[in-house]
Amino acid sequence: MSLTSFLPAPTQLSQDQLEAEERSRAQKSKSSALVSSRREPPPYGYRKGWIPRLLEDFGDGGAFPEIHVAQYPLEMGRKKKTSNALAVQVDAEGKIKYDAIARQGQGKDKVIYSKFSDLIPKEVLNEDDPDLQRPDDEAIKELTEKTRSSLEKLASQKIAAAMPVRAADKQAPAQYIRYTPSQQGVAFNSGAKQRVIRMVEMQKDPMEPPRFKINKKIPRGPPSPPAPVMHSPSRKMTVKEQQEWKIPPCISNWKNAKGYTIPLDKRLAADGRGLQTVHINENFAKLAEALYIADRKAREAVEMRAQVERKIAQKEKEKKEEKLRELAQMARDRRAGIKSHVEKEDGEAREREEIRQERRKERQHDRNLSRAAPDKRSKLQRDQERDISELIALGQPNPRASNEVQFDQRLFNSAKGMDSGFAGGEDETYNVYDQPWRGGRDMAQNIYRPSKSTDKDMYGDDLDTLMQNNRFVPDREFSGTDRRQRREGPVQFEEDPFGLDKFLEEAKQHGVSKRPAEFGRSKDDKKRRKE
Image (cartoon, rainbow, N blue to C red; front, side):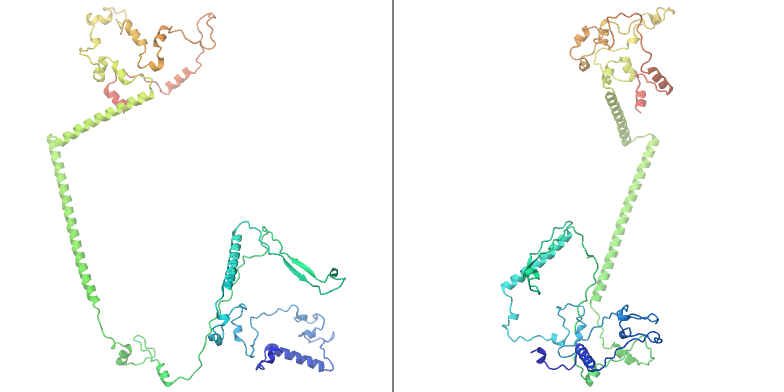
């Protein structure tokens, strides 16, 4: 027994049923016909004006070359017309299913509400129905594990795709399939009735590039189906509803395209101006008062600011006048030759500052000289050995603490009169100095004897040993010399081995000459030297 036997007969036949009936009717007509009529093309030479249109016109052959018309034997070469029209479908009652348009392009499992019956809620007849009960713990746990596994799979795929080197995917477990061949016998399947096939997933190469292009932009799927629009059944409108829906014509204050003459009372009534009651809000008065107070405060602030500026300008003017008065008084005093107390103090301070600067420059000069030539004597030692006449010429005080009155020694020795320095008036003898400068044995020892304080680092502690030795005998011979060999003739030297003569000539040509040490410079010369 089939299901169709219990259902009522459909009022309308579907397209498939109609095609099936036509097919069965054609088969009956063919079987009832005594002679089968077959359509064949006319023979060659009698085809003038004949054009093949149907498949039967071609028979089992191809196109006819003598007929210059587009021909498609066996529908070869004909472009198939594609259409997005849907086939007519009917439901179990034989009615056309119009919701097929909403289901076009959607999945078969997608729920689409397209009928009025879909909006009617279902009546709950039995509250103990298992479909209405909450799932048990086992179902919840199973669904949770299934969701977790699917999420982990998606996350692992994303992570693996982002990594530069991908590890090999895990293979699925092997499957065993029992196979029973259709042909049984000794000659087939090696005489076995059944076979067990082991299905294993093929290993994938992790370094293999993708076989297919997966970066193509796929068009989006169809959007959600439109919401069903349910119309209420049509009914007749009453007179009251017609009057309520009657809209009066608009009366404009600017446009009158039809040129109607509208009375003023009607225009004012349509405007609704008489229905309005004029009510002024009290906030307007508050706003006006606040603006007045703000304006008054602003004017007072501006006036106060102007007064302060005038006072400041008056004070500045008085200061300038006082300063000009002081300058005029100073000019009159200067013209009269009267120095003020401030000018005197300024002059003394300026002189002290000049002296301080000059002494600072001298100290800096001495430091530079001592740093450049540390082996030379310092200025203090040089000044201590100067004569009193040199100190007087240099304008320096006498550093020697002595109670005796010091005189210039050159002024003495005047017992011989004017001819004391000229050898008694003898012009032939040219003796500039009649006496040695510093005679005596002590002077020679002081000249050639180094002082212990300054030259201790150079000569060491054995100064007496050095003085007892022969001064003019070298303690070490030059390389290549032999004292035992007797020399015949004077000592022979090489002619300028270092090029000193050439260097001196070039220095003279360029105007470079070594300035001798200045002795007995005056204070002005020292100032010019520093500048």
